[in-house]
Amino acid sequence: MDGACAPLHKPEDEDIAVDMTTASALRRLRLVSAPEAVSFLVLIVCSVLKRTTEFNAVPVVGMIHGVLFMIYILFWAIAWYFAKWSLKRAALYAVLSVLPAGGFWAERMLRQEVEAGVIAARARQEGVVSK
Image: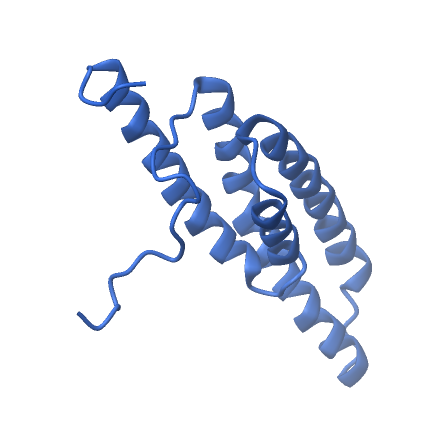
């Protein structure tokens, strides 16, 4: 196997079951991560255009990105609390928020984490796995 289909990460606990509050917190973080990443990339483009042309959208795009970043950090803290992430995993999502395309990776990883947790919760509920 060439690893092309391998997941981005493996959950630290193979049998993670999430309740609705945790799934909701992870979903909110996932939903804000991609727009935050897009706004960061647009802000970089606007910064370059400001220095090379007369076009200056940095104040507007900077404000939008700042608000999205603050929402990301708020949702990150809430998700960390409810998901009971290790410091390593929480730090990973924090670092991804300051990388230009890190929000896209965070969105994909969070989607996989929620799906794995929901599957584990359903398996426990149906009695397929013991608690």
